Image (cartoon, rainbow, N blue to C red):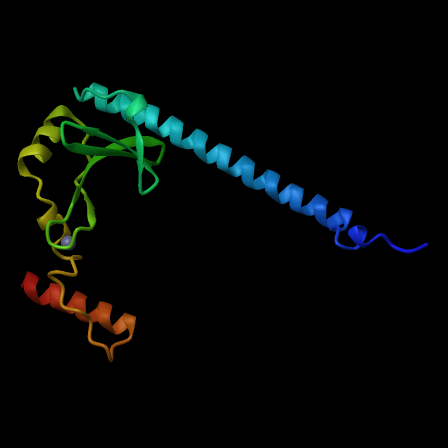
Length: 157
Ligand SMILES: [Zn+2]
């Protein structure tokens, strides 16, 4: 009996099975990630509410994978550390445009301190490509790091 040409192009059953298992695993991981994000969003929202920030969990959006909220022009993000949910303010470095995080905010007073005193430019200064001289091209990455450490040590006096 001649093989049906359409059968020849069919993926063997064992491959279909493996590919289906992989697709299921991807779907499960995506669902688990979404659930973790939703949990973190709720915890971040609760924490911000305790700090007196008027937030609604429905306003959450992802910022670098973190649940973030924008309130009156201020962007907050929540992250997990050792089982605790912590919040920071996110802003862009005015010199290079990269996103920078403030110090951790644990109380209304911390929040006030960040609102009046935190400057993304100063936080980012040491890592900012607009301020850091580019490592010499003939350095290995380890040498470049050593030079930066030496420069910091010399500057610290
Ligand atoms: Zn910068």
